[in-house]
Length: 280
Image (cartoon, rainbow, N blue to C red):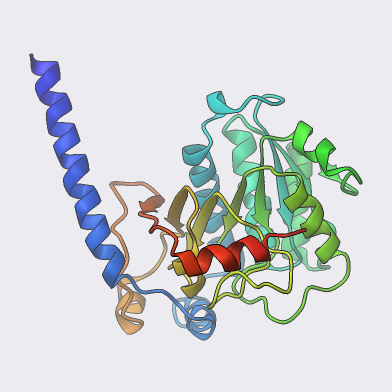
């Protein structure tokens, strides 16, 4: 009897929480590219955060989101094998930190990092991963089926909110291989290939991500995300900064570093754009 009452109370609280989150969705602040860049500048300058400090907090929250969305016991391949695809910027650094924490959480991450910046911050992150026996791929298999058969999912840490213009170098081919592998994708901050404000772009390969992990605050493109789960991570915004940018964000429960955001249903217009943008 007591157990039934506890279950009913938990279900009632969960129902009311979902209603509150749904209402918050309509008021939530979504950042454009300029606002996202300015918030970062304020964090570094006015609030005296360091890049590696924020990257550690962001990457840790990404790892928590991956664990929440893809529990290890639900994964069938190679003891929780995950491919972390990292780009040359700070988004790639978040991916390296995420990989390190996933290893500590009992997963088996492998990192693909094709274009490494020659900066001490990123070199140190690579060393930390290597010292934890996290393997790095020197190249992707030519057959996307091999990628599919080797991993359970892809963590997309290729391009972040500062990306603009066209993909250069090998990245269009890299994206096409990863998309063709048909593995589920968890994207950090924005799905790679998307415009940070408008969402999927028809003219270039873009991920149709199953999970999105927004950092600091969702970007405008997150309004076009119709995947399975959307998380907010990066629990480091000072109240004064939130007030300055009028950030309306969901409250983080307890001491959690992530919070789940309800995902809206896709409109018929967006279905056509998304299907074109995820082509090979």
